[in-house]
Length: 172
Image (cartoon, rainbow, N blue to C red; front, side, top):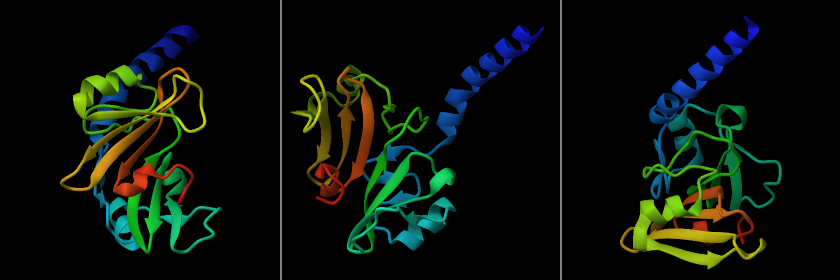
């Protein structure tokens, strides 16, 4: 009986996960759902209905990260001069996806299929030979999405926004 309940619960969660993902806003080059690149932190907080607060390591008021803690797990927003410049998704597993269906844990081949020839590849600054930065950039809007892959070629970090997506270590 217990095994049947566990299997039924797993089946329900597996069935519900795509529906939950479909209900969540998408990560795009312009931001995350109602949070748009260029918004002030108070506007982003209101748009998400979450109190975005500086993270513990926020030393520089001109450039730091804010997050919503448990109310927005895995999401961080880089703030420069009081404006949101980058939305990052750091931890997984997470059901948040890009507008082209890419999420944490996806293999870089999936990004290649979703973004095609517009995807630029660079070696990862710190990880082994397979790890990459994969970047899709829109010259017209000066916005893009950058994926960081691990040594297995799977996405472990995503950034969306303006030129700040190219910053490797926080604000530098």
